[in-house]
Length: 255
Length: 139
Image 1 (spheres, each protein chain N blue to C red):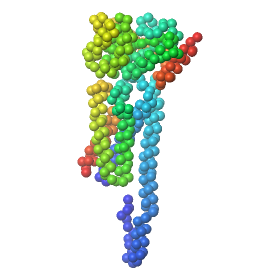
Image 2: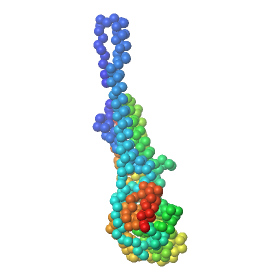
Image 3: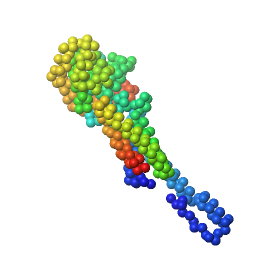
Image 4: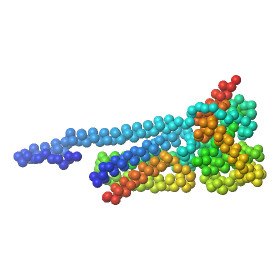
């Protein structure tokens, strides 16, 4: 700025006048004030901008809409499906899920607990459908086929639980590594390993997974997990309490 | 001031973008909603991984602190013209660059998925690092 700007000293000033002038220059109120204002504006502006950004981002993150458009389940639950809970339960919860999706892994114990919830126990039938997001999850397809193969020996849910529980162990493995891991799980739950391996690699397994996937696409599924309650797409739950509320309101709506 | 004006502006804009990006991710992390897996956006795999937090602190919050600190140092430099502040910011950015490289490595070779939000942050830090190198080279 203009700190160096000096008022030219008049040769004819007395010493006292000069001292007085210097004192005035040192305190120079208008200059200091302007600098103070500039500073205040600078820092105030920065804080306001940062605050606005922070506020905007919090708002934006709350708006990320999690798929909520409702839709109907186009493929009804049949004997082919892997189900848990009573067949004549008033509420049927269908999940389109990917064993390698972390969100599905996080929801697995939530669903488990809801099925055991005192208000819901015995009133909800849970259906698992394959929706492997193969373009982003390398072992999604094989893990689906592993669960299918376990299902042929009557242990779909045991494999389902193991796959989700150990998701982080196998998600990063090569296909060969993941395959060995799945065979090991099959042995753990007491399956015939040879029959399991054959079934996992079979065209029938691939076809079954694809049938579920195609049915999901027909119902407008584009992310996992996607839940349907009594045939209607459920909004992505924001909390466990909300998830439970969706189920209880479906329960109350049934005559 | 030997730092050219356009570089100073680029430095600030990069820091602001990084700050906004980190604020967004921190807000999402704190809201605690489990984001579903959507094709074309691999973020949930990265953001729910063990690498997404250091102890109890989400990496996004660390990023928020980092970009905030760089921004405040820059503004303080513009205010006081004290080059020491610019140097501290440059060192901080160098540390940020190392952290970004580490996280890209983790995404590519450990998690096997890239999260666009994390790449934005890596990009802004790279821009800032290039300017920081120039600042230190100038002095």
